Length: 244
Image 1: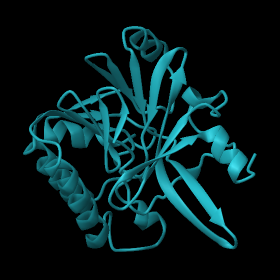
Image 2: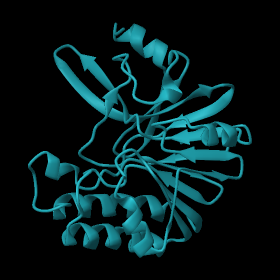
Image 3: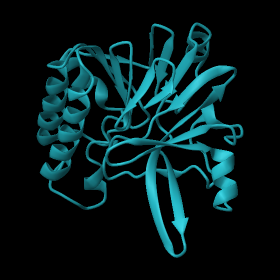
Image 4: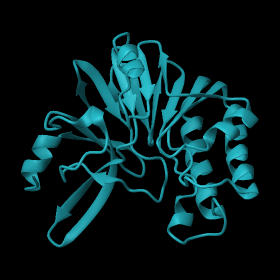
């Protein structure tokens, strides 16, 4: 599904100019829920790898893979098991692209030692062609300056999702958001972690400063099991489901 000219949604990832971007892996999230053993349970880690591999299989040759922040979930110390799983994941990605870039998210306070060990760059943002990729938890003067050179901005952090209701039944779907920030095209990525459905964009609560204004004109693209669905604007969804 093409979200904007040249930008295509593939699963929960975004593909443009032989670059694949995905966000909010939150490896280790299930540990904070009291599930699994160690940093990444075998079930979740295998599910994430399988999803990534299905995405990679449909992308063709890649120049760059960008992990757009919140690669790990825990803020605390890193155990040996954590190192093994994260390193294994990064090594797996390095087999599929010439370059892997790590963008620092607000959960990545201890990511630098892992990035150094993997010999990968850890950046607050990166500009690729006309696209600025940054996690989205903050807008520093450096990020704002870089945005002036870009025509599109790609963020994560928000974990956008839509909860649809029919009678007593509700179902939540991850989604992409496409709109504008200061006249720049803005694409908000859903969380890649399978255990994190996301935050309902119709609730009115926002995490990212890039989304401080109204979202009524933002387009929503819901992530289904086999395809992406264009569900129109946030404003139309809010009217339909009587949410404010």
